[in-house]
Image 1: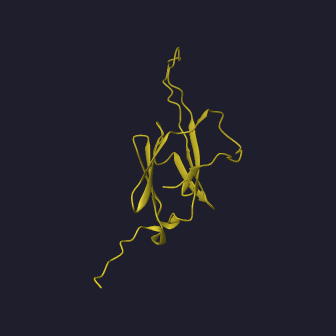
Image 2: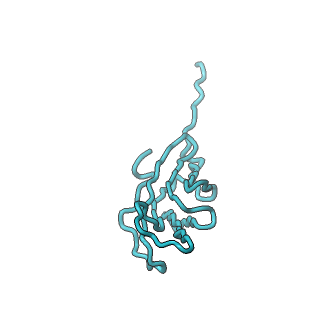
Image 3: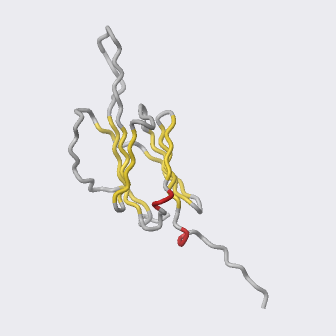
Length: 130
């Protein structure tokens, strides 16, 4: 996979945040097969209702919102785990088939499949005896 195919967007446009909560950049693993690219993002606390994925022109943006757990009749004394929203953007090349992108989320892990367009998939060339 070349850097041209998929790379992290360095200059993300400043978006106006409505929620007054920290925003984290989720850690993402990227895998490639001959047919697709796979992004696996760790986003603890999100589910299918609280994650949003948008593709605008060549920018794929992942946003996840986490609602802090409130325990009735208790006051937080100490916490080692920070809660916040998630946001990450990627620039896609024209080698990705935008119509076939699919996503699933389970236990706070987002799985995105980015199928390659037919024109860029590797092809086996048959050799004939002369």
